[in-house]
Amino acid sequence: MGAVQWRSRYAVPVVWKIMINNDVLRSLRFALDLSDNHIVVLCELADPAFPVTAEQVNAWLKQENEAGFEPCSDEALAHVLDGLIVHLRGRDESQPQRAIETRIDNNLILKKLRVAFQLRDVDLHEIFVDAGFAVTKPELSAVFRQRDHKNFRKAGDQLLRYFLKGLVLRVRGAANG
Image (tube, rainbow, N blue to C red; front, side, top):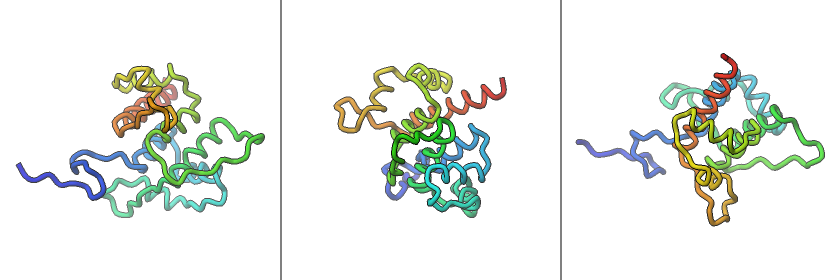
C-alpha cells in the first residue's frame, strides 16, 4: 500500500473529500433549481454592494478538477445564505441589517438554512431520516447551541452533507410529487 497523501491545511487523507463552500452552493443550486443569475440576485438581496457576477458564480459551481474552478469564499457563501433567508422569508424592516459573516462553518450554514426554510426540530429530524442518517434530538440541538454553551457540538462535514442530501430530497421531492 502506498503512502497516504494529505491535503495541505487539513489533517485528512486526500481520498476523503472535504466539504467546501462550493459543495454547499452546488447542493443549494440543485435543490432550488437556481440559475447563475438567481445566485447573483441572492447575493444582492443580502448586500447590494457585494460585487458578484454570473461568471464568478459559474466558476464557483465547477468541480475542483475542472478548468476555471474558483473556490467560493466564506463571505460569498454567507451572502448567498443571507440572500436566501431574505428571499424565502422577507426582510424584517424593523431590525437593522445584520453584518455578513466573514468566517462561516458548518454550524452556521445549518443555522442559516434552518432559518431560511423555517425548519423546526421535527423537520430537521425528518430531513436526516430521509437522507438515511440517524441523529438524536440531543445531538441535533447541540449543533444549534451557542459556541460557549457547555453542550455545544461542532457540526462535521458528514452531518452537513447528509443534511443537504435530505434537503434536496425534501425540496425536489415536493416539487416532483
